[in-house]
Image (cartoon, rainbow, N blue to C red; front, top):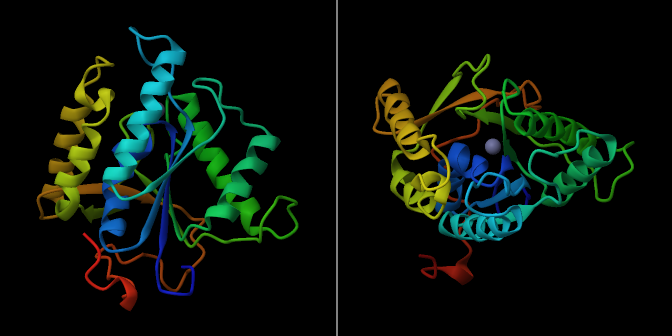
Length: 253
Ligand SMILES: [Zn+2]
């Protein structure tokens, strides 16, 4: 929490454009809809995923999709300078991620569960977990003031299911339509790029998890032991609005 107005910052980190939004975009929208801040961070564009377009061509398509999706979900978007299928898992990259966390100062981080068959996904998990530790450690020499992130969760992703155990179900019914419309900005979700049925999978998954949560739509999460606040392990997913800024009364939409 930034301390000045009760506003929280939720940061979703994905390996490829589309990962963070498809697994966590609804969770980000829960926050941004209530006046909190959201940011999507993409470790790589996922620019090698098209059969029809070159990596250069598809990269520019993906960057546009990411910006439009984030805009529809009321969030910012950041791109790390790495290439699809070449995400480094080395010290300079950890330092880069740590500096980013000191800059963004998230309250909640959402990212890949480690049990993934995709190397970029488990590398992203490792970079995020190491980056969070390093961002919090004052002895680590990276730019910015040390920052400890309060909550870290791993939302369900079809590529990250090895050892995934749903520990929490979060009701996303209120923002499902907004999330779905945002995802339709992306060719992968529309079924135009991959033979995997992303849209059907995540539509069905949210309905299945929703049934288990006794609601319409839900998402399953695992919880990270990194969460530092033992007295209050869970954020309030019902999202009470932050203190209202009188200067903006009635100005939101
Ligand atoms: Zn991916």
